Image 1 (cartoon, rainbow, N blue to C red):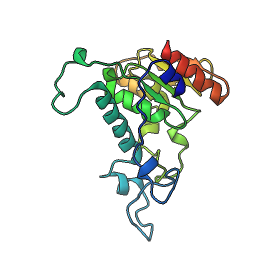
Image 2 (tube, one colour; image 1 turned 45 degrees about the horizontal axis):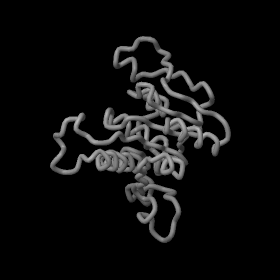
Image 3 (cartoon, helix red, strand yellow; image 1 turned 90 degrees about the horizontal axis):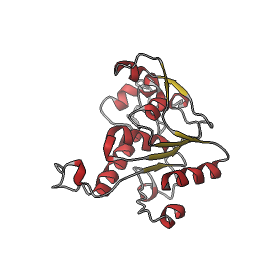
Length: 209
């Protein structure tokens, strides 16, 4: 954050749902999301909790989107303002577990977000083994996992660490739906490798260019 401030960037750091002051009893992170109360485990399936309730992951992405709209100046009463009247470029930075939130928010926000810098640290939704994991997002692994988010509508304005120096190719069902018939898509991004602290520094330098 110091690098961004020294570079003249205004930084908005937000506590998302169940982070910071949202956490009770001095906890430093949410270990398990709420589930439908079912003492006998007769309904131990995601559909009974998430059929009507958005997962914590989706609520956190919504919090990121709220911060983006505040940063853009799209406060109540200005929702119909044309994009060229928005006063600021807004970039997203997702580090230390925040990559997936930033990428999902960019996919929803589209042109409201200019650039995204993330360190995925190899995260995959498919590796989640419990439906009460706070990062559980129903169905996402079926449609390309975090790689689909990396490939989605970024126009090359994406800095990525945690995926190696060249980045992965992706077999993207989403792209097939949108008419791209080549099953392998090269993610358009700048990739950064190295130890975690070096990757973060490289990402911030890229963002400040």
